[in-house]
Image (cartoon, rainbow, N blue to C red):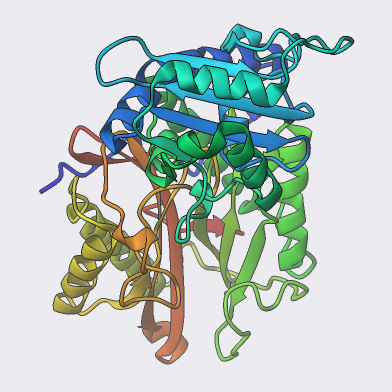
Length: 440
């Protein structure tokens, strides 16, 4: 069983100025480039060797990038340039090499060996196709990984035209050695350095702090503020901090005696005392995504706390998180973890669903899916991937229960919390919500 830990308790302290924790762009770039260097030295060679692929080729044209490409480029490159070709060679024995076959001076030189003698202003004696074939032939590959996959989007970034270009450039013999690189793409994207996991803790603190501001009397004004107002406030707050959201935030309302629809169904409804509020919110910082769902209660006149039934619901939701954490064992597939968690929930009488996903470079990241909202019997393909260490997951789920104070009205309490999975244990990054936010 995992040693399930919460790194820090969730704080309901007043609003903080998170600008002090966010670095200037140049310093952010230096950190991300340092991480890229370390990842190319450690993560990628290991992933390629585990997959049995000695050469991996990533090809993309400007503005039609493979989803894995941007995670492989230095921070001063904001897109592919013309056609950018990256070639990685990871022999079982010998030196790992990261090579670029692209115009010189476009920005890859700091992390890749430039193999093509081509500048932006002059033609080369050798075509890009001939250079690629020469480089790959020199690696003497047995299996060449290319990004085509039926099941995993992150491993399917090679466009139709570029696939044809690549096969033609390689020639018949080398093209015959090509296999799907889906396991390489997934492994590269899902595994994190220790320093990335350390930084993710602070990044999630920022996300939690913004939610705490939104779910406070400083921002929310019962009788005036709508759910959409709060959602847009969070997005504006992120923008003002120089960061970005990877999806538009939502705020939802549940109200005694009324059915307001499912989560996110009533954005224009005005918040009132006695409401249960829920948010779904995610930002990007230092190349890592957050994804958080938390809950608040709007106090009625004279109330000092949320109803006991609502507080109990959050305790059950926390228990649901811990049941999932206990099933997180390296080597198990996402579908196995899902089935075991749902069985434990049934045994403890917890009604709800689990639809947890990996997170990292992308919000809905690469790695094993642990259920989907509408697939509680397992997810073919991505649910069959195994859990590996040094990864992050977004523990996304909900419980359903009756509130005695609301005449046993059924409510849904949805939670989402980023965790790190390393050293055979789960850690809740940035702390987790164990008490409802209170809005006066």
